[in-house]
Image (cartoon, rainbow, N blue to C red):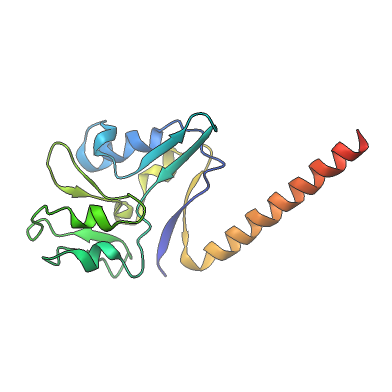
Length: 164
C-alpha cells in the first residue's frame, strides 16, 4: 500500500528544520534553496505551512511534461524525474497546483519530493509531528480524528467560557 506525507499546519512551529535536513539528505549540503519541502509563513497570522509534493493522482506535472521525464514510481507512489530526458522546460513547475516543484539553483535541475525512497527525512526531524508519513488508507481516519478532536476542544472552551 502506498504511503503519503500529510501536513498538519496547526502543529508546525515554523522552525524550518525540514528545509535544512532535506538538502542534506539529497545533496549533502545545508541549503534551504535546494530543499524539496518549503515552509510558507504568514507572519501576521502566526501560521506556517510546510509545502511538499502531494504526489497527485492524476499528476499534472506528468501530463504536462513534453519529454515524459516525469513519471510515478509504481512501488513507492512518488513522482520522479528522469534527468536524462528532462530538458528543463519548467512546465511541471508551472502546472503544479501546490507550488511544490522547484529548480535547484546550483544544478539547475527540477526537484520535488521523492519521499526519500520511502524513508522521508523530514518526519524524523519534525519535533511537533506536523509532518507524518502514513498509509493512504489512514488519511481519512486521521482527518476524521483531527476534526473530532477540534470539535471536542471547541466544546470544552465553550463550556469553560460559560462557567467563568
